[in-house]
Amino acid sequence: MKGLSYSFGILQQKEMPVATQSEVLDKEVAYVEKIVNFSLQEFNAQQELTHFVKAKYFYNFKNLPTLLIDPTVTTFDKQGGEDFTLSSKRAHYLDSGELKFMGKVDVSSSDGMTHKINTQELLIDTNTDDLTSKKEVTYLGESAKIIAQGMHMKTKLNKMKLVGDTTIYQNSGQKVLTKDLFVDQSNNQKHYYSDHKTTYLSTQNKIYAQGIDMNMQTDITQLLGAVKILQDSGSIIDSKDLILDQTKGAEVYRTEQKIHYQSSVADIRAKSMYYDAARQKIKFSGGVVGRYD
Image 1 (cartoon, rainbow, N blue to C red):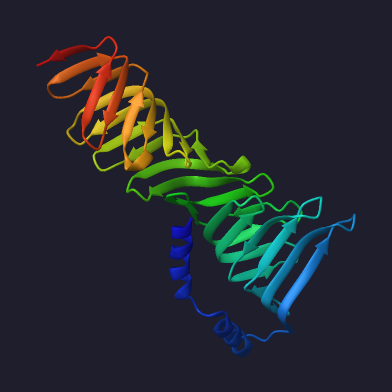
Image 2: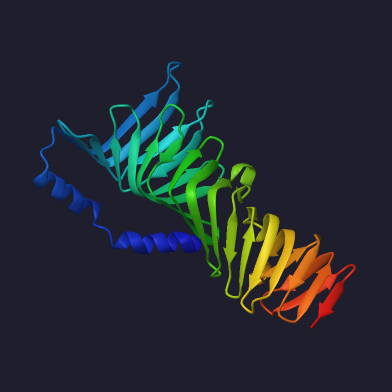
């Protein structure tokens, strides 16, 4: 996460400074009210503190949504403790009571989990504290950048759904294509999964599966259901429920399911497989039967 924070810092250095944004607004937009160092507390019907909103600048317009510059929103649980915090460069305060963030948004929960999200619009529902975006979303996860067509996050559960066609770019160079990816960080886990058709692309192999289950803490991924591996050489491996081990920079495929390997010179069947993709070495085990041309 330190590396991710650094990369975001570099991006933010290229953006327009907040003071300059304020000066532009002052000159080009006629506002009704301006507040410097704005803050607002929100309470529920039981007079319990639910939200604390602060911003460097607050602009109220006659026919436009209220604008916050450098906003930070903190939500609170039933016991009055801080639940999570959202921060961004800009946000609109809508008449519905929702807050709409624009650009990069950092979400930090009280248990130490963080989410870095970049999207055109991100809405926070002040009744449920859920986050929603119907625009393209870039999510920076552990050792990966994920791009999806939208998102919905239940912040109180620390669970997110990245909606639509989803691409995972791993820092190690591999790419995963899937759909409707769930990101579960509840109970300090880092669990990404989808039950939609998935394609895994590495330098030398293309793998098709029926779903994916990724443990980003252990660097272990399961490619679920019927699995087909296409090697650059033209060889094909058919199996089920493939385990992809990427610990310590490795790329090992293994399974205890039946194997059918086909190449231009061989047809091999076995009961299990251990495939070191980096070294291009395959070990078949259990009732191995082969035919060679």
